[in-house]
Image (cartoon, rainbow, N blue to C red; front, side, top):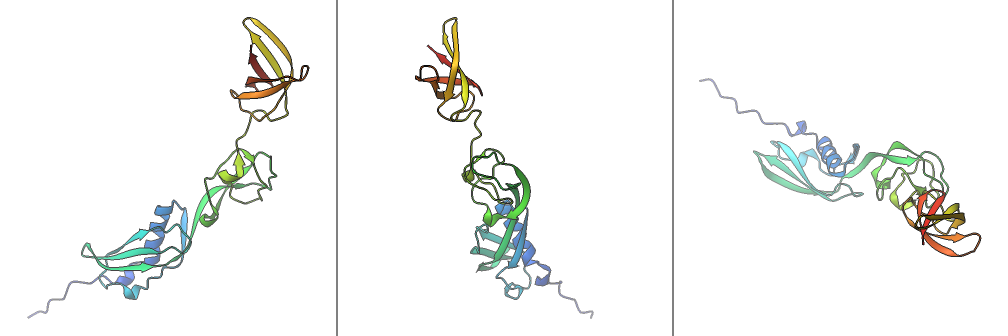
Length: 206
């Protein structure tokens, strides 16, 4: 009688825990790549016939607590809670050079540790604070880029029916095209409210 060999059993060593964790964290956090320093889950703790691993939790935090289930025959066979050590990398806009407060930002794309990214990355605007070269540029650091700034000289155009009168004026606030803006008439020193129709022109309806 010829002995029948038992069906082969998958060696748990063929399951790459680091790769499984890194792929899940990359997808969950929108990272470009993930470095796994420590999974917190030795392969010796997994059932020998583990088919795959299913991860749950939030891996995007620093030193996260996550759950993992070892799947055997399509169902969870063992569950663990672990605290892996990960570094997640993403390509975001960073300051191309040192930028002073009040300057328009200039950025380049670079890969940075996601732990240093707090908020929404932005690519244009005016720096509200000094930004060092290479630092990720976030929405909290940047204000809107205005078409005309407070104190700028503008032409004031008073419109009454078909009559238009132009004189020199000055903006009293930052503004974008189409914004209502306060201006001062340089001749009369009167303050009026008009519409910024060009970077150097405000129309005032009378």
